[in-house]
Image 1 (cartoon, rainbow, N blue to C red):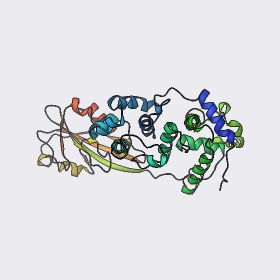
Image 2: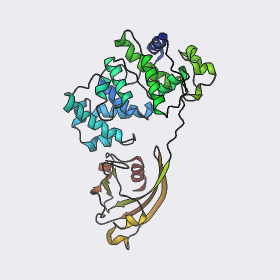
Image 3: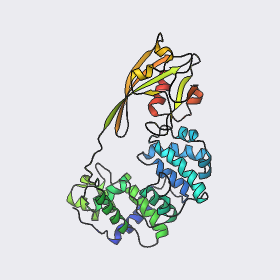
Image 4: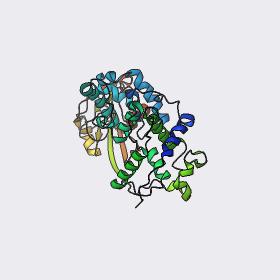
Amino acid sequence: MSKVVKAPASFSQTMVAWQKRHGRHHLPWQNTQDPYRVWLSEIMLQQTQVSTVLAYYAKFLEHFPAVADLAAAPQDQVMGLWSGLGYYSRARNLHQCAKDVMTRFGGAFPQTAQDLMTLPGIGRSTAAAVASFCFSERVAIMDGNVKRVLTRVWAYEADLSVSKNEKTLWQMAEEALPTQQLKTAMPRYSQALMDLGATICLPRKPKCDVCPVSGECQARALGEPEKFPVKTRKLKRTSEVLWLLLAHNQQGEVWLEKRPAQGIWASLYSVPVFASEEALKEVLPGHGVRLKVQALPTFKHVLTHKDLHCHVLKLELKRAPSTPHSGGWWAERDWSVLGLPTPVRHLLSNSL
């Protein structure tokens, strides 16, 4: 068990000074204290690279310049703009959160992490990021980059897959927060941890020679910074076989239906999905008798913890298939702006 280490007061001061001179300042959600923009960026950046987020962030602000605009938007529009960014529960929570900000807080984001955490899709670290960046609240953030920086500086070797060990790291992070000039120090300190983890304290081959806290980094002193953080529990990967019905009519329109609010590809539009070939063929007119069915190449789509093995049957229909979910015929100009799962969008773009 690692002992709890208390960071010296110089740690936060060093980080704040380094961020001011050497941190990132060019990203569009930086240098603002608008909680809507900071919150939007934080949600988008969860498990997604900055380079990917930039275009989506700009597109969302173009369509929804304020939280009221996002709250008033139809869900289909929100999901359509999010399409391709992945982890679609974020988009559903984003939309509901905007609505709750309007109804519960009069259109203004709450100013404390505790209140922010009562909103959909906002966890402890995201709440702390918004509160520290926008309102200078003295609260600790703890995303993947920050965990890596702090566990290395303190050589904290406890297994973070054990909840009590992660709780201890949170306590250590809170004790290391700045104590003076919080209005300017807190936003800079939080940004410094993110910047250091993203640009210098990398998962592999960290750039210790240019790190501002290398002198007090215990992992570097041990000669094994890449050992940290320690997290042994791995989620077991699973696999699932899906059968996709790519049905089109003589006009070139494709049959799409909206997925249920729960489960795979929730609330997105998709070609009909079935658990077996038999189940797919049962919805075809005359159960598929005398229909010219083309089997497209099977493909695998990799989700975070699951592999989807997708079989595709393509055919032309004169009338709608009798699928259990409501659907309709969509022309390309219309389906191209829908919220579609990435593999379905690729399928439509390459197979029609």
